[in-house]
Amino acid sequence: MENIHNSPTLKIDLAALARNYALLKSKAGGKCSAVVKANAYGLGVREAALALYDVGCREFFVATLEEGVELRNTLVTGHGSQAAIYVFHGVRKNQAKDFIAHELIPVLNDRAQIEHWNNAGPAALHIDTGMCRLGVTPAEAETLAAHHWTLILSHLACANEAAHPGNAKQLTLFKKALAHFPGARASLANSSGIFLSNEHHFNLARPGCSLYGISPDTARPNPMEHVATLSAPVLQYRVIDHDQPVGYGGTATARKGSVLATVELGYADGFQRVLSNHAFGYAAGVKVPLIGRVSMDMVSIDVSSVPEHLRTPDLRIEFICRQQPVDMLAEAAGTIGYEIFTGLGRRIKRVYRHE
Image (cartoon, rainbow, N blue to C red):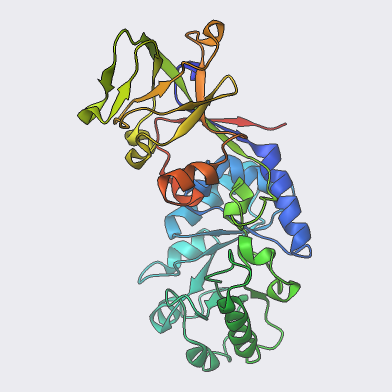
């Protein structure tokens, strides 16, 4: 078996994940599911889902039928099949039998999907209140009130900006639509929505990103625990004996006397090329700059500020860590933490800690 110390590694703290779920559940008044689509945002759906199940989560959301089947098989193997699994993208033609076989609940988004499903089993209805993405319009929803729905849901577009007027507008539209579905369970709040007023909570919150440590509102202190640490090993040290360019295109210059570490991580691993020349890592707790362009499999890090006795073959550079959470790295890349986590590649070893 390959030694993980010789590989880029994402260490996932499942106990922190569980505590994040507990916090979100408490904030949502005890009514909380978990969104584990995209391989639990890149962290590993099997391990994440089982850890969440262990602390009482019984409702999960995924994006596609294939993700739903994978999650059902995971839960059956690990715990039985008591959990409800909702599929955001709904059901397509000839898929109903697979949904039924794996006890999946489609989120139906338009009349074609409603016809494909044909009341084959429990289903959720998605009402579009302001995303202009999936879902029936509020006017269309009125005509569907005679159906029996397991859940009525909508999705907030601007909840990460608490003062955005779109939040109040969507809440009003959702409440108006729900008047046609008396007694139905309802769900509006995503991760950020949980931190809006209690009015947004309804019967079920659907946190995703915040479970994994991503901030629900980057303009405020992050209430979530750090979950995943990305680090990579040093392949080689190089002492620079004269000023010289570094990496493809020579876009940066290493000064005489500086010490560079060539690190095993690159854009093939999801460490984005846009981070060239302005990202940082941490080496033995010391902040160290990336110098030159990100290559497919390697980056160069200036470790001159790291004490010499710590510049050993076992030194690892941390790129996502407590000192530099995923949101901070995302800001340097001009993106969001979601894209950073979901873009991390297969060569990065996922290692799980339960305590």
